[in-house]
Each structure stands twice: as structure tokens, then as C-alpha cells.
Amino acid sequence: MLLYKIIIKTSYGHTLNSFVSLFTNIFKEVVSVTLPKKTKKFVVLRSPHIYKKAMEHFESRQSTKIFLTSIPRLHEELFKKKLKAISWSFFGISIKLIRLEKQSFYLKQKDSNL
Image 1 (cartoon, rainbow, N blue to C red):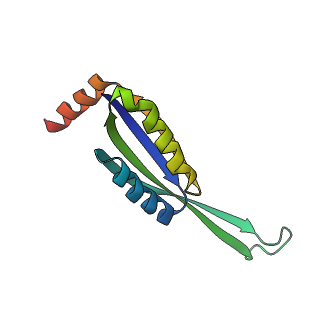
Image 2 (cartoon, helix red, strand yellow):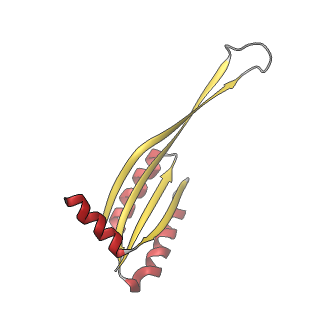
């Protein structure tokens, strides 16, 4: 069995929710963690000369979700192909796939139980 950590980032919350529902329907054995939203705020002057009070305020939010899943070695390539096919059908999603070592995952799990 191979363990994978999948990090999904997007600026669109509704896209993330629909992606998560589809992902959990396809891959049944999944553990998910939702991270807090990151917010960046920008202030831009409307007029570059003298009107300091005329400013535009912008805000950018990024939602992140982490999945942990285990996959048999024989299905590794199929898993990657399915994940790529799913991600193409959603706009603005970035997916990072990290292969974990079994021992480190189980050690973390044992430490959390203490």
C-alpha cells in the first residue's frame, strides 16, 4: 500500500466544495483536513497625484484542503490518471500530490494517540 498526501488549493470556495464531493465519491477511503483560509488585502490609489483618500481596496482569499489516502501499488498509475482527469474539469484548482513513507505516517498516528 502506498500513502499519498494530496494538497488542493483554490481561490473559489464553491469549486473546492464540488471538487471535494466528487473526489470523496470516487476515492472512498480518504481522510480530509480543512485548513484556515488565507486572506491577502491590497490597497491601490485611484489617483497617483494628490488624492490620498481615493483608494481601492481588494481582497484575495485562498482555501486549502488536505487529503490522506492509501492506494495499492498496482493502482498507482490509475489513481494519478483519475486525479488528473478530475482536476481538468474544475477551474482554478491546483493539486499537489506527495507520496508519504509508511513508517512516518504510522509514527505520527501513534504519537497523536498518546
